[in-house]
Image 1 (tube, helix red, strand yellow):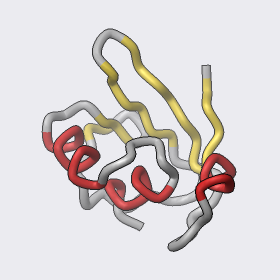
Image 2 (cartoon, rainbow, N blue to C red):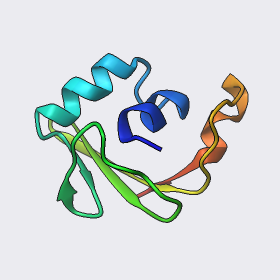
Image 3 (spheres, helix red, strand yellow):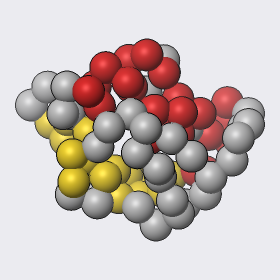
Length: 80
């Protein structure tokens, strides 16, 4: 699944266009490599997102095309 789509479906970033802009700006890394919006995300990947002065690291636990809002946090695990 594309990185920008995963971030939207998992609700880590609410809008896909915001996820795309963040990736294009170099604020998102997948497995310590700067990622493009089209980077393929797989189970077990570590995603690092820079939010201002802080960084959030999450591990991908599951990939789904559609998920309910209350189940979105089951797709990833926050690290740190």
